[in-house]
Length: 226
Ligand code: E4P
Image (cartoon, rainbow, N blue to C red; front, top):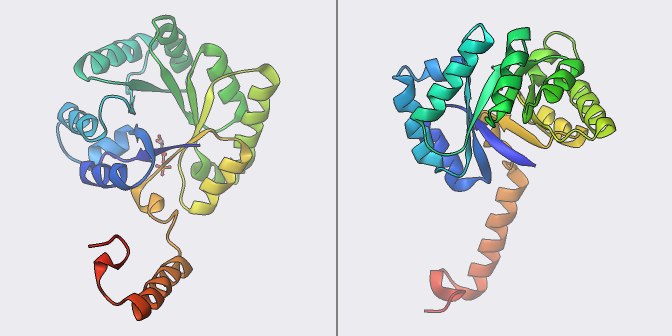
């Protein structure tokens, strides 16, 4: 499983990238505008925070395939490193995915609500698809079930497109899509921090330390030598 940060908050990205096994960062227009900064400068700061190797996902806003392709080329020229263009699964988006794929530009098909959209996007050449789990759940479409159907379809057809599940509001949804066959997930900072938080763990660590100190004292060098 690969984990992406779904955020454009540079400070949080720096922190999470230091502490967690992070594969990259995903953004969308709503995430970018929250930072209220010139967007290219912001994207460059995100790139600096994660380095050139890790993937940075940037979404187009154009209506036509030509506009999406033009934006994609512009963004990729302005930024360094591994950039994946996020393209919505509209008819124009599917055409853009075909054009970008023919040009060796990696794409993620976004705003996925049905497994058939994911199949068509993969056939067009998308490297990733992003099913919107919580947004589906809010429409009484079972988001986790859609992820497992996409995984089954890709297996049936030997498709290598990866499922990058997105839109989560709780850790259970993230866990369930991992079991359902998503290779990757993108999750907001607040939820990532909840992945490992567990009171019993904190308690155990404290008990181990207290017991140790009863015998060996409070000297920090009692384990590593002085
Ligand atoms: C990811 O790339 C999506 O744009 C994002 O996860 C949507 O999440 P939301 O439904 O919480 O806005």
